[in-house]
Length: 187
Image (cartoon, rainbow, N blue to C red; front, side):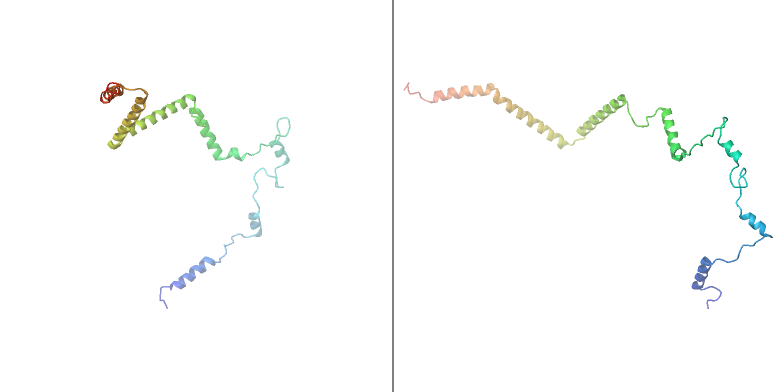
């Protein structure tokens, strides 16, 4: 059908067959007797273990007793103290303490005062930059606003204290009025 080349459907079938049904050839058995196979299946014992499967009575006593013959309690494992994260954190804390770095970010009064002064200085510098960076229109508007304030302040002050010009005006007005109006007694 397809000649020497395999059809794609045949190749796919072979792949599926090899994937789900691997070669069912058993591993060769080179042992000559049953005993060898049985020996391989038994668990391997650690040195110091008795044939019964546990440590001998003498070994257990030596491991857990002191020179007075009293049983010494075993130290319980602490997974928190043994963790790598805790060890690295402890190492970092010791290093920071050694170099004098404040770990909790606590600041002395001097440091707080210095930061406050620096903040005030930065604020003043920003204000100066804002003033320097104004456009010509903004400067002109500020000048106009200052003139208006001065004019309003001067108007508030004038009614309270009569100026010499107003008093002169009143004198001249009184004199003019007296000359132009005839008095009935003289006529």
